[in-house]
View 1 (spheres, helix red, strand yellow):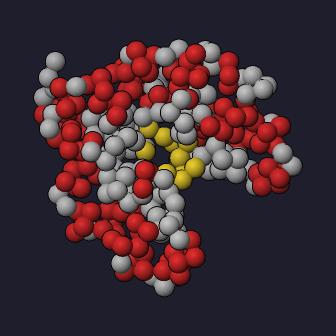
View 2: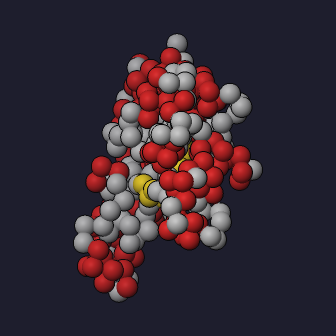
Length: 259
């Protein structure tokens, strides 16, 4: 069934809160060409931000979301799951930070591996559960990009819409030359010359967001194939919680703690 243009634009606006992840920089163009309506199954998976399927608060709305996701419902019933369980399905990601001042010491003592459940929840940055990613911070990013704002208003756009503007290669938040980037940052070049410097130095120039999300495309499958048992087994838990925090429910638990 075709969505009306007004309903589509309204849903797109609702996606502004939270961090909602398009998986391709072409999503904005595809959405404007009507692909969300023509090809909804693949487009909602690839371009949830541009197609407006993210919930307003980037929050799972049901206690069963993690279990449903581990049963494979994100793939079998994406239109419902992406709206009701966006964190568990990985279409949006919560901001992420350590919440215990002892995280550094615990990690040095081996806590990330010895006590992965506690540490993944309370020390996610220190334990590598959460990493810096180039993710857009506004639902309007694809539209602004199409209007040429990445070039016309680079300093604002590279901070607000790094994914749509292609600031980071392959979405990774990595400086190309850490030493040179530090020099440019300290001399104010991130602000004075954003078009060139922010693409060279996305990490140092602060265009990335630390978010809780899966770090391997196989995570959903690994969790679903075992009904979530890999996330709990003593042998695999440390690896799974670090690499697959969304599929294992860690991101959802973080979101609950922040409410």
